[in-house]
Image (tube, rainbow over all chains, first blue to last red; front, top):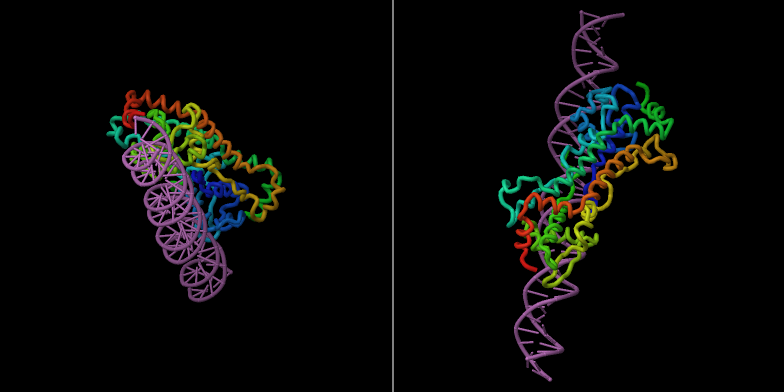
Length: 162
Length: 162
DNA sequence: GAAGTACTACTCGGATAAGAAATGTCCGAGTGCCGTTGG
DNA sequence: CCAACGGCACTCGGACATTTCTTATCCGAGTAGTACTTC
C-alpha cells in the first residue's frame, strides 16, 4: 500500500562513489568532491562513506589531501557487501512470532519448528542476497564502460590528476 | 547500518490472519476477533485487512455478523500477493539516476541504457519476487499443520462454530 | 642556506536537528438483527 | 398468529495523533602542508 520496504538511497550513492573512486584512480578523494560530482549533500554522503569504512570497504584519511580510497579492488566488493554496510545485515522480514501469543500460544517450547511463514520469507530473501553477492562492483564498472565508452576518461579528467 | 529496509509487520499479521480465516472456516470474522487471537491492536489490524480487501484477497461485510472472509482459496493467494497488497508494488531499490546529475551528466538522451547498478539491483529483487510468487498460503497452511498436528482443530474451536 | 617551529586550511567523525513515514487510535456511516406493535 | 416497523448493537472505513526512523546539518578533533623564524 504505502511506500515502505524502501532501501536507503545511501546504497545508490555508495555504489556510484565506489565506481568513481576506481575511475579517478587517485590517492584519496574527499567526500565533498565525490558529492559534487553527483550534486549530493556533502555531509550526508560523508556519513554513508563512514559506514563503508566501518565495513572495511573504504579507508579514510583526515587532513589536507585526505579523503576516502578503496580498501580493496572492485572485484572483491560485491553488491551485497555495500548493501550490508549501509542497510545492516538484518532480514527485511522480521518474524515476531505472533503465533506464540494469544489463547492458543504458550511457551516457546511448544513451538519446536520455526514458523512456516518465516521460513518462506527468509528463503526468498536468501535468493535475493545470493544474487547480490554474486555480482561485484567490477561487473558494474565494466557494464557502465561498455554502455558509455568515453566515461572512464571523463570521470578521471574531472577528478583531476593524481 | 541502521535497521532500515524493514518490511512492515503488517505483512506477518496479514498472512497469519488469512491462515486463521481458512482454518476457522466460518462465514465472516471481524477484525477484532482476528486481532484477539494474536493479541494485536484491533484497529490497526483492521487497517491492514482493508488493504487486503483493496487487493481483492479478502472481502468485507459491515454490520452484525459481518467481518472479513477470503475472496478466493488459499492456493490462489501467493506470498507475493500479500506483500504487494501491504507494501505496495514498488521496488525496494529506487534508482534516482544520480549519474545524470552533475558535471558529466546531461539530458536523459545521453543515457540510452538503464543504469548498470539499477539493472543488477532489479534483477536481484526479481528473484526475490519470483520466489515469493511461487509459494502460496496453502503451502504455508500445510506446513504449519504438519509442524503442529492439532493446530487446525484448536483454531477452529477457538473461533467457534460457524 | 637549512632546520625547526608555529600556524593555517582542510579532512573525517560523531553528536545534534528536521522532516517523513510507519504505527496506532478514534469516531462516523452503514447494515443486519431483534423486539415490538399493529393487523 | 403473522407481518411490518423502529430501534439497537455491531462492523468496516477512513480521518486524525503519536512515535520511530530516515534524512540532513553542524561543529570539534586531528592532520598535513606551509610559511616564518632562528641558527
